[in-house]
Length: 276
Image 1 (spheres, helix red, strand yellow):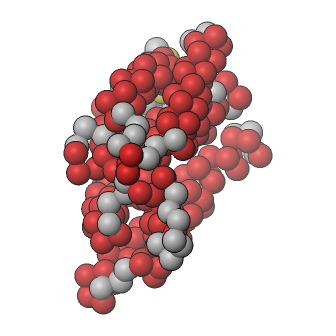
Image 2 (cartoon, rainbow, N blue to C red):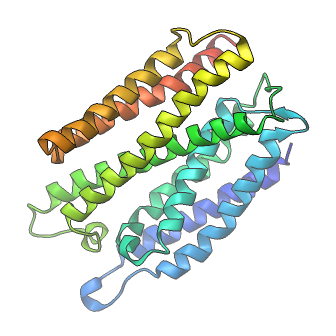
Image 3 (cartoon, rainbow, N blue to C red):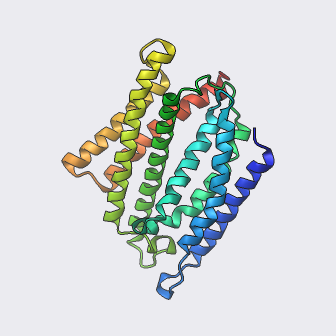
């Protein structure tokens, strides 16, 4: 188990990066040629991201056990979200979205400490199974992509409302047009939906192999398939009926809520409330 000081150091570095970029964003003035340095953001975030990833690796892989309780799960989802968002800054077409780096840094500063507050109680004895680890990774990536999609949808909603005002905040000035952001949103949803489909399918396989029984109607499985159905309906509505704007965002957020209730909700009930 890594030292508490290392966790605190990673959290502090996230906090410093988030504070700096928030100040830079507030004082940005594209009209006057004053904009936050994307390259500086990339390099500044690299250090806490690297520390966070190392901490996760050391706390999750403990010998031949896989310690993946709700604390490590939440931390991993936020880390992957921040990592994907950070990597997107290297693509010029996505740099206008880097204004969210400040709030994501703030969330990561808290998330990196969660394993200290919610340590894993019952490690899994399946760490040697590469396929099982791939199943967990696909699940965490799906969660992360849908988290980014939800943030993206909230940002689109705020931008749409701000367009009706004469004065637009610096947070929105550098953003791509709404139609471009909408295309990005559905690319995220398609990728996340594919990973979620793989997660559910591999979950059925592992249920047979590990527990010797087919998938049962548990809280996690029920909400997992409900979220899959909501995202499938969203993509079908987009393809056949051209769903967009508020309709698409409502379906997306509903699917994200069901997905959170599926995995994290079940883990919270089992580990925190029932202590199992």
